[in-house]
Length: 102
Image (tube, rainbow, N blue to C red; front, top):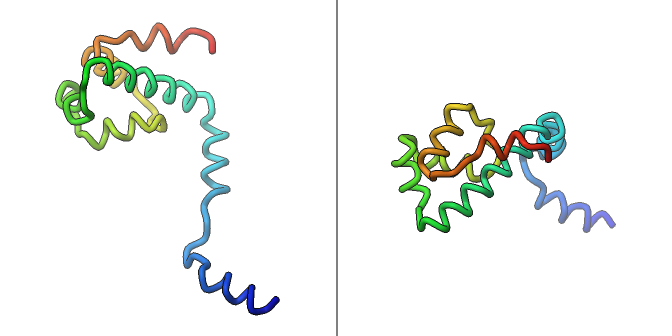
């Protein structure tokens, strides 16, 4: 039994896991995360339809490709300004759909 425990310790991470903190954060921010994920899915569908890459979308929005990537992960707390930029860049109606009851 000690040998197994020693082997497990050898593979143990030097930094503690933050899964509990991340799970708490997701619970605390559940309402807007749900909307952010819905927007991300709408964007991905429209980007596929238009044949757009993240880089091309970033150019249309006037932001970095890294920021577009963060938005598409569905964990970005989007401002109304950013949502309007997305709508214009993708010719997509986001706000009316997001404000509808889930």
